[in-house]
Image (cartoon, rainbow, N blue to C red; front, side, top):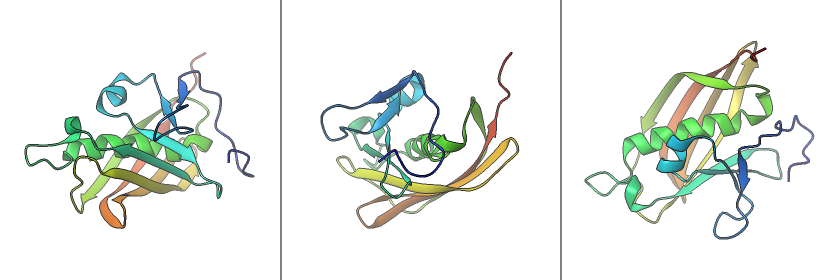
Length: 153
């Protein structure tokens, strides 16, 4: 799956690949303790070169109404921005802009999947957009801008 005719992501020592369970073969980053505590969030490269992200909704992801908390959607969307930008990133980067729309609720046990794309990468900025869904139900749309940071000497 990773041998698509596009840039491949740089080696990341913090990249973990699941070897068993529902997300066997999917990847996640271990360095970000915020995402680790709020996830786990996963991503994989599809045969067509796209990147798909996902997480299984657990009780810790829910708000008082037993729907996925909006902050969880936003945290996952930020994770997705960096997964979608993986082929464009050669150094650390930060989110500088983020916009979203809440469309529907997901519940405990749902599989939330996100797809998206880089709409433009120029200079230090990468512009992206994505959508989350569970089954055929759209849940959340988002867009963001990532700024590439200069490598430290």
